[in-house]
Image (cartoon, rainbow, N blue to C red; front, top):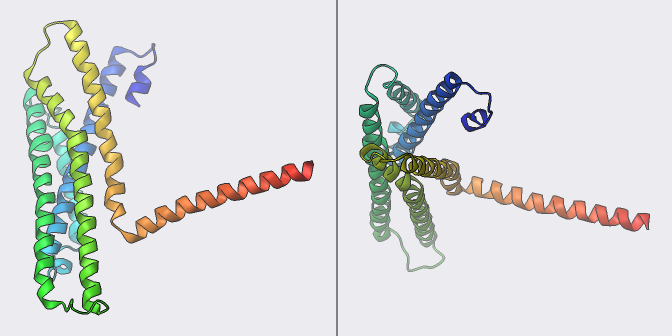
Length: 250
C-alpha cells in the first residue's frame, strides 16, 4: 500500500512520511511476530519429542493462546520504542541484534536439536519393537516412525534453507545500513534499491513458511492434492463440454 500510494505524484511530504513510518512499524510488528511464533513452534515440537507423556499437560490450547497474545504485545511494544523516545540507531541495532540475528540462530539450533532428539527417540524405541517379523505391528510402527523422521528432517531442511536464503540477505543488508555510510548520493541510491529488493525476498519466506509447516499434516497434503485434482477434473469437464458444444454447433 505504501509503494502504491507513493507512486502518485500528488502525494505530499507529510503523507509520504506518515505512510513510511506506519508501513515500517506495521512491517516490524508482523515480522517479529512471525519470527517468534516460529521459534515457539520449534520449541513446542522439541518438548513433545523429549517429553511425550507431558506434552498434553504442558502444551495446552490456553497456554498457546496466551503465548501468541504475549508475542503480539511484545512486538507492539518493541515497535513503538522508537516513537516513545528511544534513539533510532539504538532501536535499529536492538532489532537487528535480537530478531534478525539472535532469534534466527536460535531457530536454526532448534531445528538441529529437533532432528537429533527425534533420532534418539527412535533409537530408544527400536529395542522394544519386534522387527524380526516383517508383518508385525511393531515393524509397521517402526516404519511409521522412520517415515515421520524423514518427513521431519526434510521439513526442517526446507525451513532452514528458507531462513538462510531469505533472512540472511536482509540481515547482511541491515548490518551494512547500520555500519556503512554512503559517501555519495549514487551509493545511497544503490543501497536503497538493494534494501528494497532484499526486503521483498523476505516476504517470500512468510508466504512459504505456512505451506512448509502444513505439508507435514496428512490432512493438509490430502486437501492440497484434492484441490489440484479437482481443478484438473473441472478443467477436463470444461474442455469436454466446450468440445461437445462445438460438435453440436457443427
